[in-house]
Image (cartoon, rainbow, N blue to C red; front, side):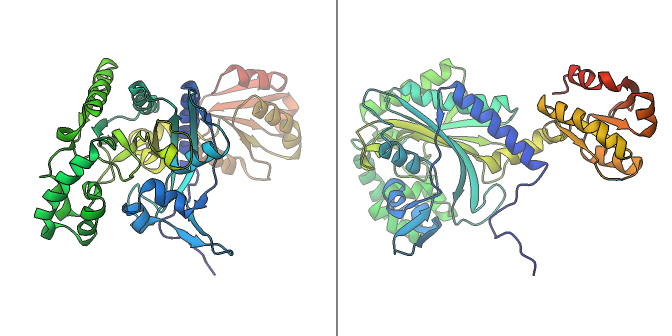
Length: 421
């Protein structure tokens, strides 16, 4: 019987996995440069954690969560996003203290029951970070700057930053009333979900993807006109700071994100090289979530980026450059003695950080050279009975096809000095 991967999931195989490893390594190094420390949380949590933090009227909670009962009847959910679990863990493990800043990052799989399409899977991977304990708008700017710098570092072009303010608990009720009145006047043009949401949580209508609802949204009054002075000043400060840092951005008055815990400024970073699912990173401030989940009253801001979408765009732009070399050196070995003589060479080179592969089976030179080509090796070292007798190895540059003889005693030092990395 043959099995296939479940719809909405994807095997990440060579050579694509090397691209993922490159992205993860680059992100982790940059996060650590920014002072973030890694945290690893469980893949499933109590369902109430997500219901309370994300919002019961969101698409995620209503339609997309993988929820199940365990053997004791407890309702558990595979994590649909990372922030709620990180905040829960930070509270439970006493990582938070008033007056201190806690900066945590995570990476791993998330799960949402969505319609699979390019860049969107039911099991998908995120890299994200949370900065907990500061209300300074510079922390918002720092998060956005990290994303811009990361995309610059990996060479991703065509990136655009979009920002908006969703207000705070003080000013949002006034906008909610205006929004409800407007939606009631346009009820017949809303989908069944939005007709229900406009009563319980009208802001969620702005996040609906149904085309008729999108047309209604385009005519809605903008939330910026109803912000309190504090939120207005905060939004202005962030815009000025981004301008000072030479970050080009667009104010999107309908950007609200699909999670209820956000307050004040939210953002999305989109790629012009993707289709409808064009957001490669997103985040914002969530000043009330820590307290709502049982922790101290602490402000916070964070983001997450989608690995599938980032790798998809990067493959289109830089696939050859990033995935060209799997192997630094390939050893083509002819005969048992060549295998015996070369094994220590291979081990030494690997310990120095070089990617080395070798044929340790009895295959023809033609077959082995084909394997070296398939492995995108930079160099191939050829050693057979004749080379052993002469005490040499033939080193072949796989790009220029030039070959040179190197004494076996000098082989390892010669290859290390080439700085193939």
